[in-house]
Image 1 (cartoon, rainbow, N blue to C red):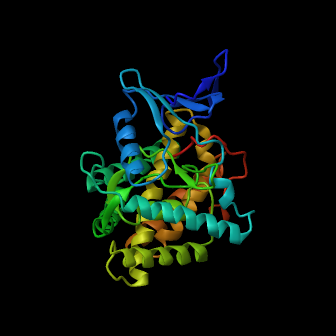
Image 2: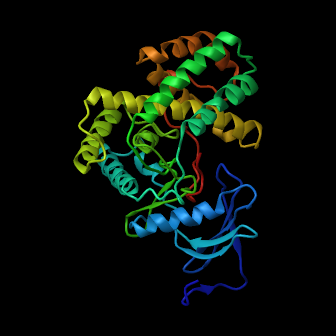
Image 3: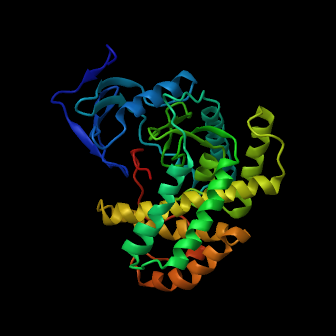
Length: 347
């Protein structure tokens, strides 16, 4: 802890909103303020959090400074990044010029992450088994447990074929360090207006488009399809210039980008359903319509996912209006509800 830190007396811990995991956060008011984290060691990747934080910091990426760690009990004492999430700065209510600047800032941070050395001891491989296990959450939690549908043998085979195509696409991409949850709620604006990165403990080595699609097809806000394509292709040029990506046709890159997004959003449909049904975090259901929109818009673009799109429209869509959380997916954008401002909520 810094020598200059002074704790106000009596000591007070201000609870902050939690994230999708089992961690609890508290603000300690002092000069400066700090964040205390209760992160159960049997449920959270605490050693990975520290290892990734240090690796990112070595490459100049702003993550919270670590002042104290108790691995045995799962306690951290961290730098307080404040309360300015990037999410409100990317809202459709903001002027496009301001939004453009903030996306450029986030993309610059992403480029820095992708240049981090992929140390195997710090960043495990994001392999086919992991990607497959994530997509399996869709059938188990969204389709069966949330909607009450039992998948027959044809439907299971159809999903398996889709998964294989998405896995093949992911494997064909350059592999870089991946934050794995790089979106507007995990990026924070600091006092000097630079970006800080949080919730990075799941970082891996995986497909180069994964974090880009997490940012541009954010599950918590909507960017127009034209803007997504424009920004994705501009980022592609940076990847080519840096040597991370060989010269690639625009449509080929967009196909990889869309299929990576399809894998992610199929996973997220399952995760949000599980967060509600298993963990009692029902607010995540309010974000499902936008995730469904991303999923189906990507699925209908490619012949390999057309069967999935048709099945979803015929089998799943008729059941959705009965769900309390449902809004028309074709026009779904960001959720019109109060968002947390403490910088801790994530997928």
